Image 1 (spheres, rainbow, N blue to C red):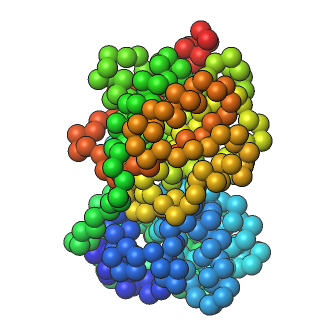
Image 2 (cartoon, rainbow, N blue to C red):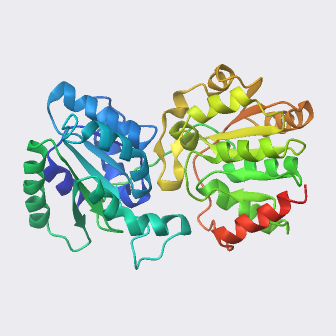
Length: 373
């Protein structure tokens, strides 16, 4: 289905969401049509944030907003859907567009398998009416679904289009780039050298894939690394839990700007606990690159100032490899919670692979290694 036709049939003039590769056609359409325009299109920090923002739009205009997301974000919307939108509370109508990763019968990465199994069930449990859009879904079928959805909206209820892989198309191209020069994979190679045999917790997406391939290329063990393939935004909290319980061992966290934004409150918890053995590195390219390159607000956010305000005793920014190596070495030697923001370009090599070990194997190897420290 052409994404332009879907948007026409929906008839909304405000969209907010968190980008998803399954919804790349919609995301590119919105960027080409509106860019980032607070009147029509906002990319928010997480899906719950989007839902509350959309609720505010409805309160101000009386119109029905659209929230788009990957199905992994359903967990983030449960609270606002159940305790804010529901017709037993404020009865705020809303349309969700959900990319269906891990659909049963369709091969996908391990972090999407269970989420894919419960995607439609979770929506139904939240009393959200669902229509599934496939490659062969017709415009008339979507129009009929929208007619039913509007009756639900009139009753203060919510509805969702669940989008199967390849169901939406968009012919126009969007190029996402910035002015930064350092490439993320090379940044990760520098971090791996600095870390040596210290444990590393790496964030969701291409960063973990690049760390895995860095170890492979250098003939190093993968036991040093916990690859947070799902649970976006929680890597630093995982690292904190490890650091607290391994106080004599230095722990590194390789994070991303989209992940940090998604659950930024974790930085306040990190700062308040201030583990002396944790180095928190945020690779900031101002983009949700793993799912297509759509922008985050991190390009306009002073993450160093945020870290300092959250209580990190050390927070710096590096925009060259010389500066990065210098700050990595300084962080290793100071024995105090440290934060390093690294300015990064957008892009990865086309032949970037995926981990060849399972998530369970990664966990067990990492735990076995931690037990030796």
